[in-house]
Length: 322
Ligand code: UDP
Image 1: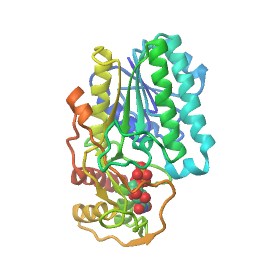
Image 2 (image 1 turned 90 degrees about the vertical axis):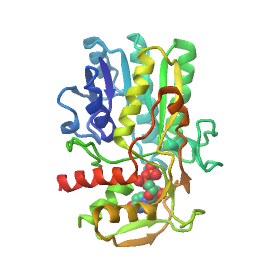
Image 3 (image 1 turned 180 degrees about the vertical axis):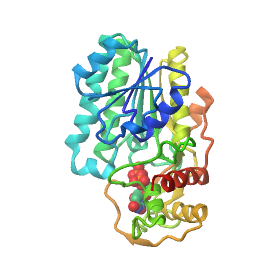
C-alpha cells in the first residue's frame, strides 16, 4: 500500500487517479487547499495533518505502507516572501515529522515533490540537475532544505528517495473528473481560462521588461498527467530497488513566454483576451526551462503532452466546472 500525503490537492489527486490502477492507496490530506471530492473513490481517504504525529501513527499502524509520496506543501512564491514562517513550518517541520514516523515504522521509500524554484536565477538557458541550487525565495528554500534532509537521512538511515523538481504544472485529467482548482487562483493558465470564460475582467501580465525576446517571463509548462506518470515510474524504481536516491527535473524542455501562453489559449479556445501590462511579481526569475534528459535516461520517462494539449485539457475542465 502507498501513502499519498496531499493526495486531495491538484497534483496529488492526478497522481492518485493513476496510482490506484496499480497499487492500493491511502490518502492523507487536511483539506486546507485540497478537495475531498478530487480523491479517486478507489483510494482510502483520511482527513488529517502530516505535521501530527498522532494522525501519522494511526495510519502507519493500521495500513501496511511500503512507500510514501509527499505532495502536501504550500507552493506560492509570492506568499512565501510575505509569510516565510508558514513555509518553513508546513513544508519543512511537518515533513520532518512525517519522515520520523516513517523511519519508526521502517518505511524507507519516499517520493518528494520539489520545484524549479530550488535553482533560483539559473545561469544557463536550460536547467539540468547539475545547475547550482540557489533559491531566491522562502518557498524554494523550504524545498531545498527538505532535499538536504533527505540526503542526510539516506546516508544515516538508508532512506531511499526520489526528488522530483517540477517546472510549471498545468492541464487537467482526461477523465474530466479533476483539474486545477485553487482558491484564490494565482496560476497563469487557469487565470487566462477563467478570463476567457467571462469570470475575470482582464489578464494582468506581471512585467514585460524582462530579458527575454518579448519581455515577459518564460516558463516550462508540463501536463499534470505527465507529472503523474513520472511519479509512478520513480516509485517503481524505488520499490524494485533499481534506484537508491535520485533527483530529477520534470519539464517539457520547451519554454513559453506569458504572452505566448495567452496567444495559445486564444488559439485553442477561439476567444480573444483583454490583456493589461502590470508590475513585476516579487520572486519571479525571467526564465525557467528544464532539461529532463536525466529521468529520460534513467527511467525512460518523457513528457508526452505539449502546451496545446495542456490548454485544451484545462479548457475542457474549466468549461465543465462552471
Ligand atoms: N503570471 C502573470 N499573470 C498572472 C499570473 C501569472 O503574468 O495573472 C506570470 C508569472 O509572473 C510567471 C508566469 O506567469 O512569470 C507563471 O506564473 P504561475 O504563477 O502560473 O507559476 P510559477 O512560475 O510562479 O510557478
